[in-house]
Image (cartoon, rainbow, N blue to C red; front, side):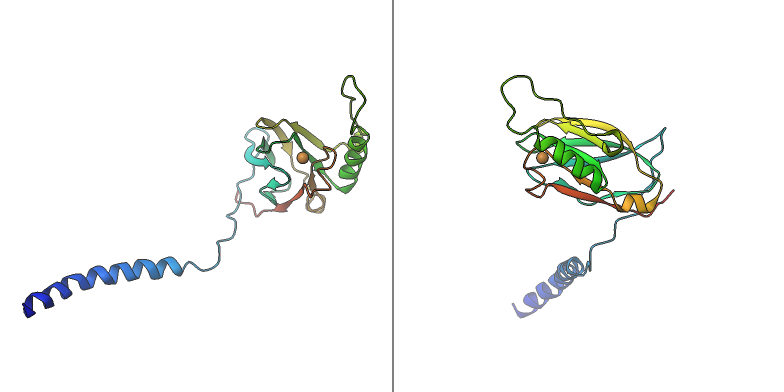
Amino acid sequence: MRSASVCFSLALGPVLALLVGVVVSGCDAGPAAPTPPVVPGSSSAPREVNIVLKDWVFLPDPVDVVPGETVLLHVVNGGLEIHELVVGDQAVQDAWEIAEAAGADPPPGPTPIVSVAPDVAGLRVVVPSGRRVDVVWTVPADPATVAGLVFGCHIPGHWAKGMKGGVRIASSDG
Ligand SMILES: [Cu+2]
């Protein structure tokens, strides 16, 4: 009996060591790996980027971009409300916030057309709940301009609820 028990322990030893090794290596992952370098998109082969609009956030936030690249944005509205993605600097965000606030609670009749001056128009994509709109966007080549870009939604009340995001300059791998 005694020798059988010893044999059992010896046989189990390597299995336990293996299990312990798995658990230890699982805990030893350390800090999250940095975002891998991005292969920038071109006009002939835009890089695909998913942006999800929710009630009331953009995901991801920030979005990694490389100055000068061309991306194909898949703008998905995963929220219950209509949302939009406005890409531009703060002047662009301010212009759309003012323009769309004026259209809140419109009188009966056709929905008023909302517009802003071309120099502060930026890029704007309106997406109904549950829908996806694709748009090609060329990221400005000047890193300082990219650093000042903001994502915003100006459907009345949404900006105030915190629906804003941004971009981050990613390292380029190509
Ligand atoms: Cu919104």
